[in-house]
Structure formats: C-alpha cells, structure tokens
Length: 213
Image 1: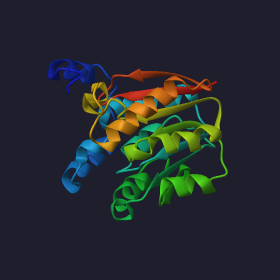
Image 2: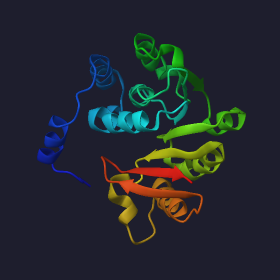
Image 3: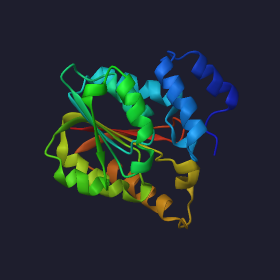
Image 4: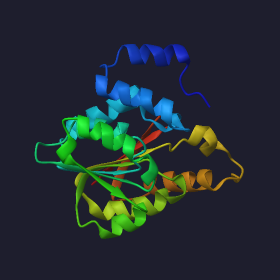
C-alpha cells in the first residue's frame, strides 16, 4: 500500500534538510551490498529521527535492530555530549558495514554495539533510557515493548517502525501471517496502555510515537 504518491514524496524530500555525505555513502553501500536495502530508514525518515532526538536531547538511547546503522547515526545526532546510544542486532556477519561508518562519524565513542538476541540483551542491560527505536523482528514487538517500558524514564519516547505493515493492519478478517497479527495486537496494546500516550505517524510504513507519562 502506497501512503504517499511519488510526486508528494519527492516534494517532501526536496523540502527537508539534506543529509550528510556520510549518510549518503552509507545508503549507497547498503543498496550495493545487502539483499534487503529497503530496510534502511532513508533520508526522510532519518531526518525525522534526528529531529525527534534533537528535541529530546537524550542522554541514553536504545535501538533494537541496527541493520547497517543509518538510523543509529541519525538518532545519535541528538545525543548529549556525555550521552550514549546502545544498538542491538543479531546479524554479526553484516556488522562490518555499520562499524565502518560509525568509526567515521563524530559519534564513534558514543555508540555501543551489542550483538545477540535483543530479548536476552535487554535482560542484561541495567540502564534507563530517554529514547528507544524499535525496528527489528515484528513478531517480538510486544515482547520488546514490555521489556523496554520498564526501562524508560518518565517523559521518554519509544519509536516503533513498520506498525502499518504495508496496510495489512487494516485487514478485517484474521490475518494469515504472524507479523500482521502481532503488529495489530501491538498497536491495540499501546493505544490502551495507561502508562503511555501515543500517535501513529503515517510515514513510510508507519511509525508509532509513544511517550511514557
């Protein structure tokens, strides 16, 4: 499902602050060397992540799902000088790519990579967070939320990507695939959780912006 026409998307990109040369190179290499480059956040979504991070000025950021590190670098732009972003991914074979660009960035000393199952890593983290970005396996979104919400500071923000799932969440009959089922349940869960307030932004494949009270 296309939420925006190509013409409107081009217009939005033309009227959005341009990205850095580093991010442009990372995007290009992601398309050259990965089999699912569409997983990349991209310029428009990346600028939104950057602006939200800059508005919050987080000291601690958590990212579940690194991929090639594009969103990581965007989120890091809002970090306090003493802040840190922890990014978790289980794909060790691909980690050479984000590591390369992290090292070239001004945030090299502020990015901590954790390789492994995110649910296990979350159990081991003794941190509280101001900003969290969830963009990993959709079947675990509810599990990620339940673990992360207890680690959020009051006023902290959770961003969850792909919550519209190509429009499949609109299916009235029972969906056939597990990801759609879980995402519909996730959206319902968050909307009815008294600990948070939330809105779904129809950007790309849908992003939930969730604020802990």
